[in-house]
Image (cartoon, rainbow, N blue to C red; front, side, top):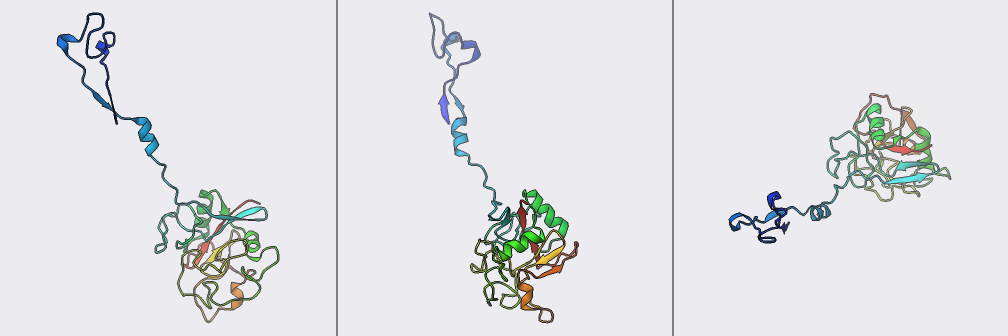
Length: 227
């Protein structure tokens, strides 16, 4: 605040606190000081609220893809959050699981993206050289949070620094299955199911049907833009 002396309207022609050309305020009265907010200073001090959903993306050919599995705006490293409004791509938060096809698609759209197509997802995983796994041509135990070597629980995005493509896309194998626009699921998940598990299900070219209404807790997604 800066104290500014303000003259009342009736004293505009006479001046403040005294006479001008012999005149003055009635009975020697003075106009009291008035505290006026320093709006310029207040505006300088007020910083805009930071958007927690600052998306990290990777460019693959002619499209962009989330570098991390989609997460909710209010997700933390310990809680997946409850705000389904839009999808984020951030490191070190629990991903957005248990999601139907329509909800996943809407969350991507709200962030200015679309749910990745099957072709986009596969290209991001396999790369220009046609990798069998996102990190290379041989399965490496413990590299990703998959059925074989995982923790049997979902992990925060990007937790395994070696579970990444050369281009910088994390967790395309393991952690959560990932929906694609055509109603498939790709990439396998953390869940161990000895009766049905095969290492091949963690490969880039493996895909399975994911009904639109399916919302199992190990089913997530990521978003793309372009093409």
